[in-house]
Amino acid sequence: MLLHRLYRAVIMGPPGSGKGTISGRISKSLGLQHISSGDILRANIDAQTELGLLMKASIDEGQLVPDQIISRLILGELTLLQHSSWLLDGFPRTLSQAESLEESYSVDTVINLQVPFHIIRQRLTSRWTHLPSGRVYNVDFNPPKVPGRDDVTGEPLIQRDDDTPETVMRRLKAYQTQTEPVLEYYRSKGVLETFRGTETNKIWPHVEAFLHKKFAVVNKGVA
Ligand code: G5P
Ligand code: MG
Image 1 (tube, rainbow, N blue to C red):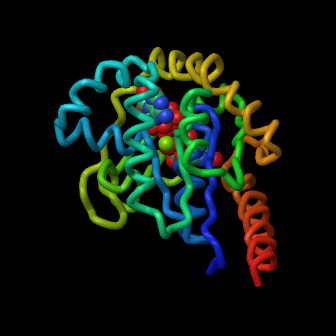
Image 2 (image 1 turned 90 degrees about the horizontal axis):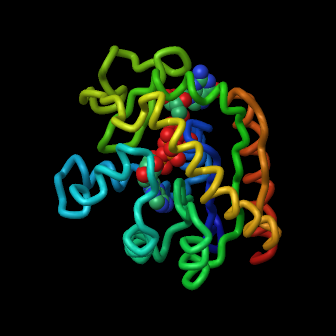
Image 3 (image 1 turned 30 degrees about the vertical axis):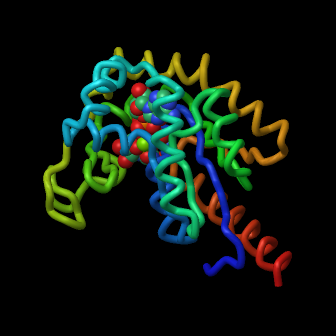
C-alpha cells in the first residue's frame, strides 16, 4: 500500500512471541522497512566486528547490551532510512532507549504481542534462523522447504546461541524488568495496540487489519 506520509512503527513482545515472524509479514503486506536490533547485533557478531565481539558475551548470556551503544546503532540505521516508512523490532527495550528514539522520531503505532510464556519456550528451542536476512523457521510451525537451508537463498540456517533453555529464562526476566515499563510509556502516549494469542496465524489477520485501517486514516488525513 502506498502511503502519503512516512509511517513509524514499533513491534514489541517477549522473546519468541513472533516479532520477527510478524514483522516479515508486515514488510510484505504493507511495505514497511523492517529493522531488527537483534539481527543487526548478530550480523556484527558473525562479521566479527569490534562491536560484535564486545557484545557477544552479553547476548549469549541473555542480558541487554548497553543503552548508549544500541541507541547509537539503531538511530544511525534510521538516518539511512529518512525517506522510508519503518518498523522497529527489538528496539526500544528500555525507557532510556524509548526516550532516545523520541528525541528524533515520534512513533505512530506500537504493536504489542502478548503470548503466554509456556508457548514461547517450546518455540525457541526449535527455531532456525537465516542470519543474513533474519528469516526465521521452526521445525513444527514453518519448516524450511529443504531442512537446514533458507527457502530464498539456499544458504545454511543456524540455531541462535541464546536459544538454550537457561538463556531463554534470563531473556524473559530481562523483558519483564527492563522492557515492560516501555509498554506503559507508549500506553500513556496512546499509541500502544495489544494483540493476544497463542498462534501467529491467528494473531496476524488482526494485526494486518489494524494496520490497513491505520494506513487508510493516514492517507485520508493527507489527501
Ligand atoms: P532479539 O533478537 O530482539 P528477542 O529475544 O526479543 O530477540 P526473538 O527471540 O527474536 O526475540 P521473536 O522475534 O519475538 O523472538 O520471535 P520469532 O523469531 O518471530 O518466533 C520465534 C520462533 O517461533 C520461530 O522459530 C518462529 O518460526 C516460531 N513461531 C512463530 N509463530 C509461531 C506459532 O504460532 N507457532 C509455533 N509453533 N511457532 C511459531 O534480541 C536478542 C538479544 O540481543 C540483544 C539482547 O542481548 C537480546 O537478548 N538486544 C538488545 N539489548 C539491548 N537493547 C536492545 N534494544 C536490544 N536488542 C537486542
Ligand atoms: Mg526476533
